[in-house]
Image (cartoon, rainbow, N blue to C red; front, side):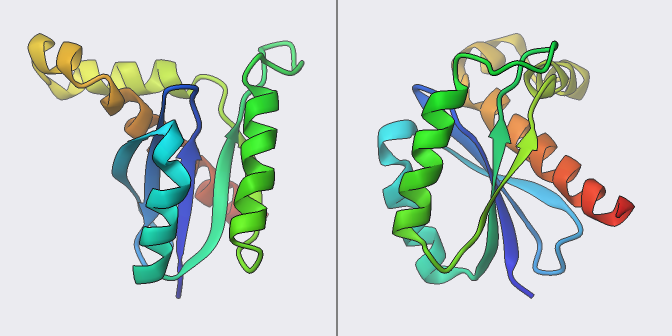
Length: 140
């Protein structure tokens, strides 16, 4: 079975998570500078089979579009053009950054590492997005 790959898309950097080949568990893969994301994905897809890209869909609490929704939509179009054989899905990303911060605090990661590794939140957010997507498929 192919992997699922989730992206927490940001203006400066993007968190990336993938499933195992059985599509059961989400694991953090990397944090990549946004301008290098397509290059990173092309390299990854050349080595690993990806069934679907899952993008976090940024929405405000009231359900309206957030400021980052347009850049996500534009990136999704570039992703579809670069990988026409791999579908792109969206999943709600509300609260993922908050949950990621909580997970980091609870994990005992030192304050120094939290300050230095800003991409850690993005990577964990991508894991939360992917795990949420996996769980939503099992509920259907």
